[in-house]
Structure formats: C-alpha cells, structure tokens
Length: 135
Ligand SMILES: [Fe+2]
Ligand SMILES: [Fe+2]
Picture 1: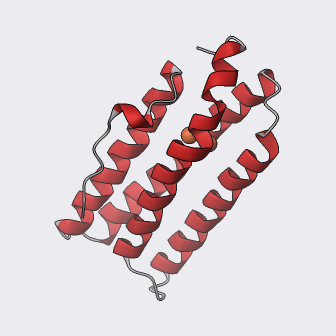
Picture 2 (picture 1 turned 135 degrees about the vertical axis):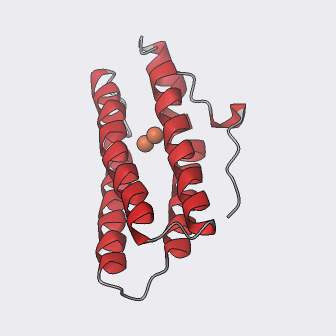
C-alpha cells in the first residue's frame, strides 16, 4: 500500500489540528502496513476501529472550533464528517461479517477521503479560524 507522506500542503496552520491530522495519517499508514504484511483480521480491525474513534474525537475538535468562530460552512462540513463516520461503520460491519469488501478497499476509501478532506474542506476553514483567534 502506498504510504502517505506528510508534507506542508496538509497544514491547516492550527497546531492542535495539524497534530491530529498527522495522527490520522500515521494510523492510515499503520493500516496499510498491517494489510501489506497480512497481520490478520484482528490487527486490521483494531486499527480501523482506532481510526474511527480518533476521527470522532478529531471531528469534535474541529466542529467546536468552527462553532466558536461562527464559521459559515460548519453545517456542510459537519455533514461530510457524519457521512464519513457512517461509511466507516458500514465498512466495519461488512468486514466483520465477511461481506463483499476487502481491507484494501477500506484503506483506499480512508486514504482518499482523509487526504481530500484535509486538503480541500479542512484547509478552507484555516484562515478564518486563525483570524478569529484559534491557534
Ligand atoms: Fe480534519
Ligand atoms: Fe474536517
């Protein structure tokens, strides 16, 4: 699996959030490694579960900051977060029940969604939140 290499393009400019994004990318890369090395279902599911839990925590950090600063696009942003969590929960259920999805497909979804969401949706709130005192 292709490793996602953190670079300054991913930086929103808010320290807490950048650190949380780095952790998400780190978990994504751990998942890729677990799949590549055939570490088994328990290891893979454990990382997916950790990614889900950490995403919920991270999304709350972002949504609280957007609420505190009256960010005008909070609602569509939150909808993206909610849809992501729903998709991950579905994927976990399907993987658990041995349905028609592979860990690589889940990894691919996570990688595509996380990188696109950071680069487009998250980076969009950076300037306004920073201007309104979030650091
Ligand atoms: Fe984010
Ligand atoms: Fe976000």
